[in-house]
Image 1 (cartoon, rainbow, N blue to C red):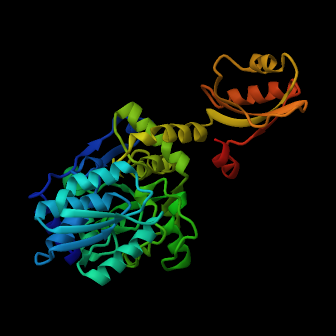
Image 2: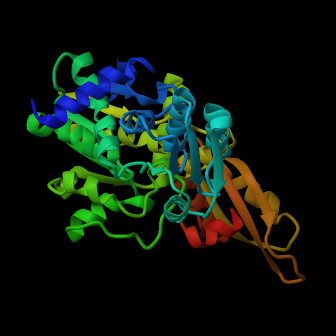
Image 3: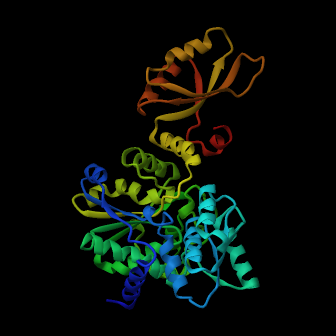
Length: 408
């Protein structure tokens, strides 16, 4: 057993004083769907509904003389630090992006109580990270990185310790979501070459893939904050040192809309609430199903801090990705019966979700924004064919992100 493994096991044992091990559950639905033995490591069931409490616990327990901790977080690390501040009776100053979901801000306040103060700064994680480090340098305190810290990495590795103990063996594959790399680097270091690890990133925050391609950490030009738990613009230096030998073929990048399909599926079928980052590993199994068939796979559901006010957006994104909802701009003739003619073209499963005149004038044609929901994607083939036969002119804008963000 390596020194790292000894320390990770000691961290896992010490954690039992604060919270129980999170469950490792075999998922029948996913196992039958993909023909594999699929287990979920339910980090969404930790006291702060994410694995981040592990790193915060381990790093803070190693600073017994420290009475002030400072951190930057998109939400989950903040909750872990806040929880431990209250548990240990120490002060915490927490920096979070202004764009952080309100649910995560509220829970951070709840977990920390009077022990923490929260500063909302910047639109992106990297903005508040810089602000937190500047504050710490000026006023003191121990800066606690959400991922780029040896003690944090060691604490996150306790997750792997539990997987091996609960399963009674090493799984064939472990699927890991990646943000700054704290958890994934810890798990990889624990298992070494004893299992095959796969890594999943959101398209709007694929910092591991960028670093592997460049051979060193790089800063992304743009970060999409939808998958807030993994929306990191630059992977950590320490975490990348532990991940630099990962093969690019083992890194899967998923679109934000696609991730939403798993969030909806797991909620509707399993009653499991996952935040976008928490759904990454489960959704990635579809891409590797032929590879993992008949094997044991552990997917880390890294977090369940989901603000249900975002549910309509998640459903919308999932429907668009699945092809059962489309938006298009219709050029509608300004004559009696034109609207009725259009309505007659709709099939029995087609439902109008949006109907809005985009331009009103005395011209012979008007532009109409139309949203249609249907039961299966192929219904749109029939609908568009009938529109063309009837002489209607339309433009499908469903996947035009630049246009869609202004009108949908």
